[in-house]
Length: 367
Image 1 (cartoon, rainbow, N blue to C red):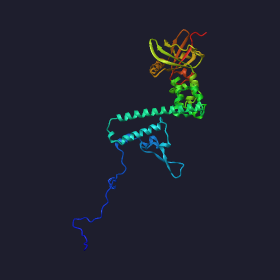
Image 2 (cartoon, rainbow, N blue to C red):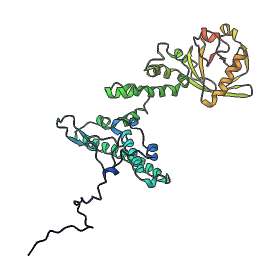
Image 3 (spheres, helix red, strand yellow):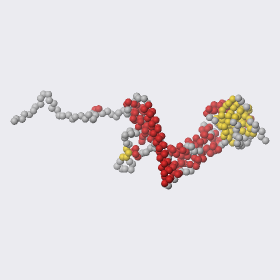
Image 4 (cartoon, one colour):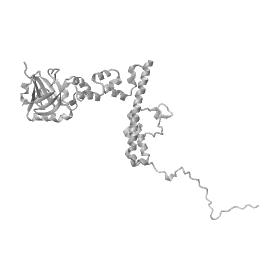
């Protein structure tokens, strides 16, 4: 049998076989450079610098964040979600959850032009979950502390040590000045919390609102306090809280002006009766006669509007007296009440350079 070499015909392909392309693998020519963010992603994804490096690229819920451990020279990695635990009611935890929500929306083209009801519902759910987690955390801490006290493992005073700092600061916000002063003596941590100037400022301005805007009034209370000192509100609190004050209604004849708060800054005590509920200014006299008319032992008052709604009438009354270079006078059976606008007398005799209304209370018929 004779073997014959097969020669290719005219139509046969003699080229070597080509590899079968993998349908799951994209050809090199089809691989594009780094995808640019869509318009929606650019609008909703925040800048990484806003939240810090550790939150700049938050993982999706199905991914784990890994990092190299500092103690292992082999650069082993560990799960960051397990290593870093944020308080359920903390800013980092909420920011992380918001990142995940925004990333989810950016990955869903169907949501790009949809109603915002999805986002609103998600945010409501997120807030409710965070609130519940915070309550559950506090409940667990309380139960653990009670169990520890019952077992003799811990003392009752250790409860605050188990609370998050944010909760402790919030509790401190309900304390008054004397109790805050006591807390400052407990430990260094409580001393830092109880020295918060924002809280001392709140306590002071509750008693004397104008101290926030009238720098010259500080000298009337305690001239030794530096108004630029970082702890000025805590330093001024003891004397500001001890100064007696009263509320009254100021009227000119037949016309309501404003509601006032009167602080006694010097002079003889006014007494338990304080000021009348209503002071009616019926007379005026020239400011030049103040030095001869006001007695040395008279009580000196600082007036401020009771609320912002009273500021307009308060300033109108001051302007009314300044234009006429007059002091206002109100009388009752036993006392004279003199209303003094900013003038030479307040600058030289009271040592007050500000623009608020001052007052004098003295006996109508001294012995």
